[in-house]
Image 1: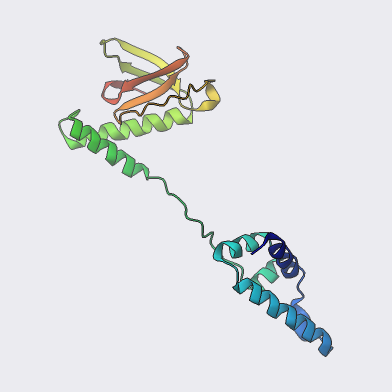
Image 2 (image 1 turned 45 degrees about the horizontal axis):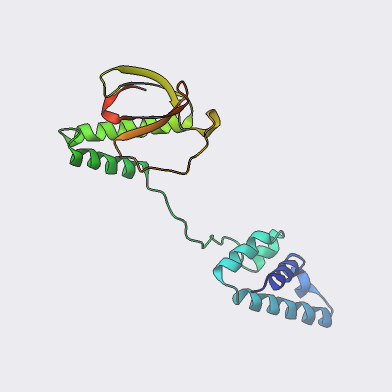
Length: 186
């Protein structure tokens, strides 16, 4: 339905007099009855999306209810993100298939640890201690929260393995990463 028609339909619903039925004047009754019939007909010709959008624009709540435009749910499909539990189990199975840990319970512990570390990094500044590949113990502060650092994206984004945690090192002022099994404390 064209925007102008929807706009006028919105105005007609907002200004509709529901009490026309109590009028003693037969001409007034016929006029408002005809308006109600036309409004209901136009509403029935709207798609679910248009009905939802129209209901969001109507300010007169009683008229919205009178014409059956309350309780409408947004019909646009939403892409739901995987649940945290699903992500953790996916990562745990990835660790298990790679042979990083011997048992699945160890994989689950590591996957939950990675999940908590990433959640903390996204939330703010975190102190991290991990063992580098050279055997050296590194203690640093990092974050994934963009409010705490400035970075110009170079446009290259490499996919990371599920067992690697990437973070922005605030002391080195650059991106760093470590394998989850090398994390000592966060």
